[in-house]
Image (cartoon, rainbow, N blue to C red; front, side, top):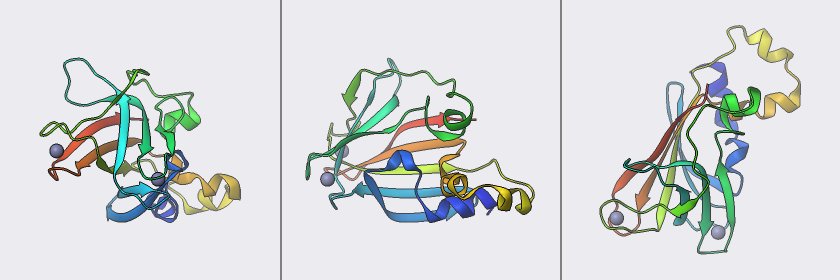
Length: 168
Ligand SMILES: [Zn+2]
Ligand SMILES: [Zn+2]
């Protein structure tokens, strides 16, 4: 595991605020997180932009919780991830017309949300990391360079990709 991934283990990226990690699997520089709403409900409605003729979806991505009514944007390639935080946004096709993400098998809309968060970029020298100020160090987990979101359907347990983003 590299330094970035190691740091990112401590705290989920701030764009996912409103959700909490219920399970995390570390696979090299990839952190796989499973989320639930901060209220404890783990079945969410996910809203994202339709991508005509494609099976996956575009950002921005939002969640709403049937349990507590919370609703929040949780990923936007213009402001999140490495290019979003440091380079003014990634070159991703977007569609801000939110629609409910549906299970491709049964059209179910109650989903468990999973994220695969990639940290391929690293600080080569641990001293570089040590010199960063504490505020920046606290949000290093935000500087992921790729993201995959997937849903697990409450009705049929089908796991399917919602989208993949290159962010650096
Ligand atoms: Zn909730
Ligand atoms: Zn389903």
